[in-house]
Image (cartoon, rainbow, N blue to C red; front, side, top):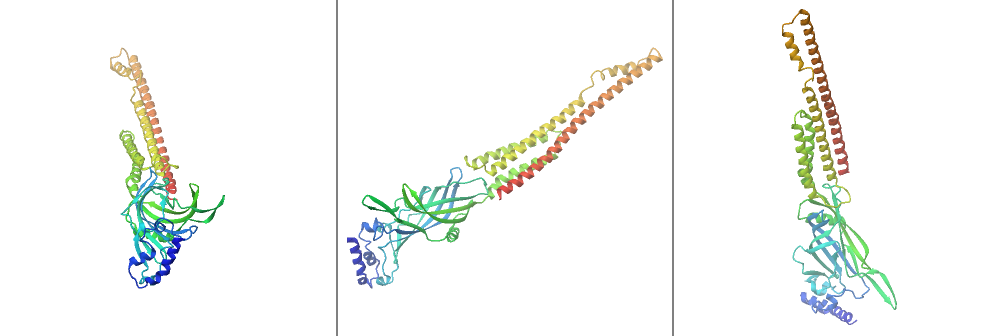
Length: 433
């Protein structure tokens, strides 16, 4: 009551300050130069059950780092504070038209606002040491923070993903006012600190994009606001939630990762035109498979170790790796069939060819009679016919194995190309719904 009486006395004596244009007279009138605990430490209300109205705006000025493995977001934000101080209003006509005045923070009460998701918070620049007093009773100040906060990310559509992170602003101390009467206690609907946004989502988004200081991997899409009343440590508190939505710029990953993998797949398809009789085709396919394996090691460093859904880029690489592995096995099978046919035709006819020179030699030797010569000629002719028949049989077996290898290669090529086309179409629909 003594403070209210003193304050009312000062207010009543404001007419005596007419014509005084100094800030010192204004500060003396408001009682800010006496280190009064009521002005610096207690909520600036005449009645303790009156809630303090706080208005906030959050602007994103840069996105410095997004760590998918640690599920954290590092950004720079500027927070605008404005709250009602019932002790710092004055009539501008009494002070030569002064409508605002800048004073140090330690001269007035400052709301304790924190970001609940914050892992690490520090001032991005030197902390603002001043607040601005408005003649209507508002106190305004701004602070720029470098904030690292926890953010649950879904990398299912990486690198064509859109992430949303929330920043919850609340007071860790001020909660709903509780009135006690005897042994009974009940709470009223008003909080000690009522938090409201100043601007709408479109203004915050547009202003943040204009003030954006970096053009890195991420593009800011929108900033949305919502208000809720949550229970923290048993006490309900006002919360102002900012939802920051950002989109990844995928060009770097497309050029350095996705396109090389696709090029390897196209080279694997083109290897069907390489002759299978030599070993060049198999060596070429194995080289492509090793190159894909190196890219998979790079993918391991990009993606988080734990994820609810398998990232589509992982599916993309694993399926292509599997298809190329199957292609290598098919090439091994075809080479085996062709080699088997070549071994078949190179085998000499046992029991026929060795005796053929002796028969011919005997046929050229002088016969004892015309009948013996005729029999020997028939015998040699029978040997020649048997050898030719055996040779034809071996050639037919060779052609049979070669034909099987050709059929297997053609059917596999058709199925391979069809599978690749269907897979790329389905993956594109999932990546770009």
